[in-house]
Image (cartoon, rainbow, N blue to C red; front, side, top):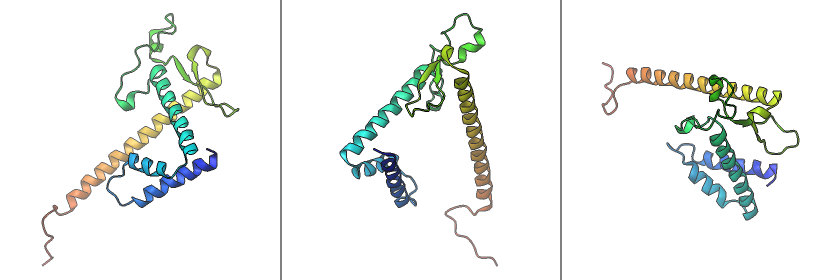
Length: 167
């Protein structure tokens, strides 16, 4: 699958979503099934390979990282025991982190913390700060929406009761 095919797949998925825009709920599994039905065998094999890579990255995050929080998982109990001589406060750190971007276009690798270069540390600090800021902004917006919705509901007539005309 080339970049063009990936773009085509994205367009297919977007078309399917557009077709269901007015639905109250949109099922990603149904969208995926409909999109897969439009692809050739070679395209499906390539997508399977990409999906397996995602699974491998997630497994690496779970094994070497603390990113189970979204799934309600606790921190990895094995992390932080790489350097028994380091201060206790560093034991919350992961054993491995994603390496900085690769110029050769190959898959990003997980690097042992003690083998990280300055660019790896800088990349991960930027990435982590960006994730936190994005999630905080999203949380603020969701809270604002909820408050707005609650206020809007107060000013609307209760549902199920007819609106009486003004006298």
